[in-house]
Amino acid sequence: MSAALRVVEPGLFTTVQDLGRPNAIASGVPSGGAMDRFAHRAANLVVGNAESEATLECTLTGPHLVAERPCLIAVTGADLDLRVNEQAAPMWTGIFLGRADRLTFGARRSGSRAYIAIAGGIEADRWLGSASTNLMAGRGGMHGRNLKAGDQISGAHISNGRPAVSGVHLPAHLRPDYSDHTLFAIAGPHVNVLDADGRALLFGGPFKVSREADRMGYRLEGPKLITSGEELLSFGLTTGAVQVPHGGQPILLMADHQTAGGYPVVAGVVSASIPIAAQLVPGDELRFAEITLERARQLRVLMAAALDTLR
Amino acid sequence: MRIHPLGDTALLAELGMRLDTALNTRAIALATALKKRRDVRQAVAGYAGVTVHFDPDQTTFDALGAAIKRLAAKRPPMAEPGRLHRIPVVYEGPDLEGVAARLTLSPQQVADLHSKPIYRVFLVGFVPGWAYLGPLPEELELPRRHVPRTQVPAGSVAIAGRQTGIYPLPTPGGWHLIGHTSVKLFLPDRDPPCLFRAGDRVKFFASTT
Image (cartoon, rainbow over the protein chains, first blue to last red):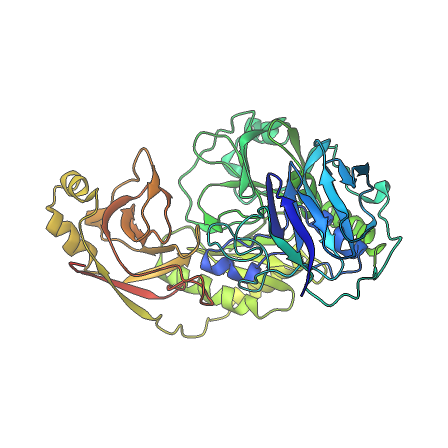
């Protein structure tokens, strides 16, 4: 199929992502997928795609893309100063690009990851049931690597060049409040390796995202969490798990986390807070706030209802 | 059995806390049974427990936890013996001499002890294709290296504690490297993309290539 967009500059780190490959976990392959699933889903729904279509995940510095044919796109997530033909352009809504229109980004204003969806989806290599890019295996997405200059991005499905939907918009009050860095969490299976003081530190914080922060996870700086007890037998890990290795600096596991490990997991960030976590950058402060499973359910339902307004 | 939430869309069901073949067999059987449920997105057996990713629109932590307890109480179906893999090893790893010295054994004795048992694949995970194998003979038990290597070559055969394994990809690692194999563990173009599956059996044999 003819290309929809051509990559002039790839940005710092732009990859193709979707909702991941959960069936590969038992082979030690991370599930992967978009870090901020809310923004990923919203971008797809705004342009009339299924929420599982692949999008481009752009990190800190966005790409420079040129439309090779008319297409409908949407950009969501981090505010990286989106521009179309040098003019400021709106996010969380459909943008119609004509042939030769230029999509660029300026300086990062907030957040870390923006998502670009194209009506009709993105044609990408599928590996183990997903188009998500896995750099370690060199599979999925754009031939298993991040985008580079000259890449052509094609639609996955036939598009007649006219927007499938238009005027769809997600207003600010229905989006996550990315400026509030409170991560709601459920106490983890091994929270008892912390004493009362340690638990108060964990759910008091604040912690800071260190420079060791990528799609696998974030090493956190802040109060040292002293753990007791013997080494654990390895078990399956999850996105949002807060594990405490020797040394006491917790690690928050994100989309490309290792599938199994034996460090104690003292908290699990709830699904409604993962999009907030996905938008943190090194140096950002965060706090873990302990909530109940019932409160987590309410937050999840609110988030799903916001996306439902786009359907 | 203890069941703990892992966030709001997963849980950890712990069958026990020991490195034990019977516990691991139960964990694998439980994961297999759970994968058939519509409200379960994925179930992954660990050494002695199961991590279950569930669909929160179809079930709750409490409801699924109760179902798991009922399932675990049933006698599991007779486990089929896992597939047997015979893996050639060149026992010339950079840590072989040091390991032998610490264990007051000769390098040959280390190789003989390592290639004697039929190991069980307790779980596949950590990095693509990595399998935790064991139990390693007690005579070979050593703590991990104090300072992990920043890069271990793919194919390295390693030991730590009561476990042994093969590095499938070049990764950092803290285990003792006693040999290497030419067998590929991570097979990205196959589905599933790895040679070993949980419950399989592995026999090493000394080789010159």
